Image (cartoon, rainbow over all chains, first blue to last red):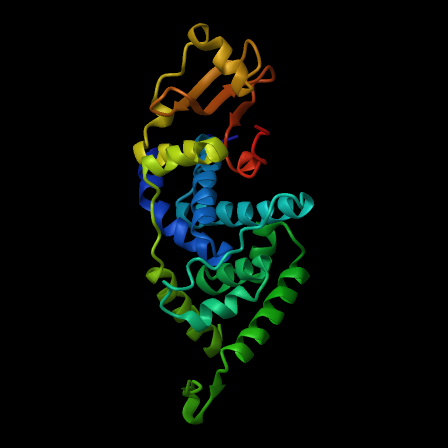
Length: 171
Length: 116
């Protein structure tokens, strides 16, 4: 077994400091609660630290994001099994976002659906890669994405105009 | 990626970058610690980024406090984090099988408060 090459790897502290703000924002897109996003980002770094010595990766950012998103989904599953632990799917960030229509539309999706959407649309993963990262069957991811995009097309009320231009509804 | 995906990506990126994420202050973290001590430990990690490089705590000086925090007797302490009052927020220790265990973190985040 070849030991991981750590010669070119930045220190854990440097990675944590560099990626923490973006990690919180990415998780906030999924959990919609700034406090929970911070909690999850911190738990992500704790988990990453435990794996740090055995990791040989140049793509640390997506690796961290995947850990965080998995934690977000696992936390949701855990709390569903323990109903006395209230979900904090709040909307406390609603007044601060730049695109309230999109924020509201995302809020009507399930957390898993938002996670799959973020991993494919923002991170560029394939459905198979998302399935592997989230530990669910590929068909499940395909179903989430199909349903999610269909809903967003309707809720964002996008329609293609002439020459492929998008017409947005007039408020 | 089709045109809808591209527009969605652009809107998501713009919205994500606009999110205002507040980093908790230590004072606020202390106020939350009764309920959220494990999370606060990680906050402190990020605030100082030095928690794991701190020398491990001597067991002998803190046996009862470690036991109260849930660390088994005889476990090797790997790292600790405490607040300004000396209360443990997070302890990492090596159990009898050699596994590193972290007390603190998201698993304990939403534990109901203790009965007064």
